[in-house]
Length: 403
Image (cartoon, rainbow, N blue to C red; front, side, top):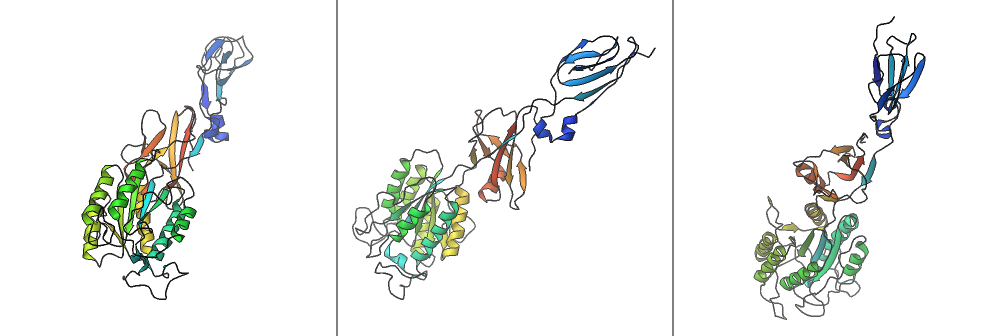
């Protein structure tokens, strides 16, 4: 008679044959019941894999146990093999950060037709519209803005309002020429720039236009972060209530920018060839500080540019600061028992962003409808080091594979 004993050897066969995240390796608990005498009995069991006694066992569950016992009274040896559990493969959903709403407040005073040295353009006008050649501040600004808008309109909701109304000297534009809308903003912005006529001195009514821009932004109902981007080539020179260009309205403009920030609309200030003008530099520095988005570690607190390339670089930096680190989980549904977040790094490699409230990601609230990137991960998003975000999830018994 054999000594009464049972040896059960378990191994996860399905996970050796196919990727674990497809098979969802694991098993369900079951109960074993006593089988008949002798012979070879096979059953499905998630229990202990057999018992001492006469013959094998028949069970139900997720494990196949084969019992052998010739004399019906001795022990036998069972070999357990996990059967494939229910399939709960992973789901990957591409997710995007919340796009910011950015309204460009663009100076279109006559001085924008000068070059970056404030010299009147040479070579006459183009088609009688008062526009100068490629060296004018206007040409360089519009080229840079069109380039950046075209590259970023999928992740930034752009709009445009002009400083000044060409119909009236010191008249303030009351509404954008291009509303902030998701999607294709390049074509309407290009058309708006092309439609500008420089037919006379209209002044720089910064304070009035900033106030009107704030009223427009207050009317937007989307939850996206909202910013103003003031691009001008000089000191404000249209005081409130006046209809003639003359004198400085720096204080009025500085107060208007501060009021915009208080209302929830921070302002990035860009100076176009202004550093040689002490009065303009001082006014723009104060506006940059009041707007809440002053740059640090530079010669000026506003963003000073003199050419197309410089403005493109500055706009990219501004977009990085404006981009939100909140990412809605749009398209994600079902059980979130096991989750992961991945992204493409600067080299195009897929990396995992760990769930970490300090330098990784975390849910914004208990509803799990959005996540937020924290610390280093947020910085990498804003610097465009991380792109191509994926939210990956599976059931409790699934295994997530990244890459």
